[in-house]
Length: 189
View 1 (cartoon, rainbow, N blue to C red):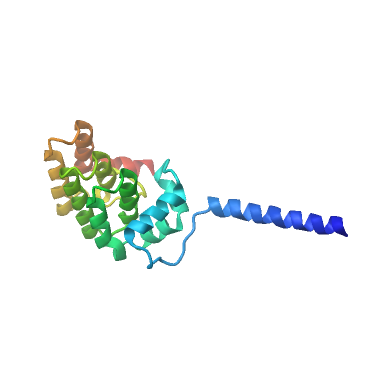
View 2: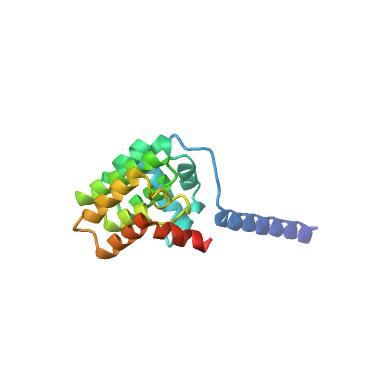
């Protein structure tokens, strides 16, 4: 009888361990968190992922998924967050990915705010490239998908004219403006 009880207890522990491991590997969604500030949510996401090897790692944070699926309530706070020179590049990258599901007009405002932060040395070129050029989560990249939009053209033209941005970055901007980036993306599908 003791052997049976020990066996059952061991099996239960093993099942709970497997469930925990599976839960750690499975992206989750939950009810939106309205009790935390935007900055606190970014910190939670950063702890959830520990290190961001690639953007897809963010999907393992329920807080990130909540922000990505419903970014508009945090839009104003995200604008302030992206301009704040005290936030790290990784934190700003997380914020940018979370805001990538905004409607185009708000995403352009977010991108423009990030660019202003770059001009005042509160954001890195890498962040601007991520917001404007990066294709994750595809096809959500509002800039690439809407390259003919007048607001997109205006933003990209400003970026192209900035003497501090690298020639490589400007080449990618040219590719977006010409539609090459979108064409290449669609050809890979």
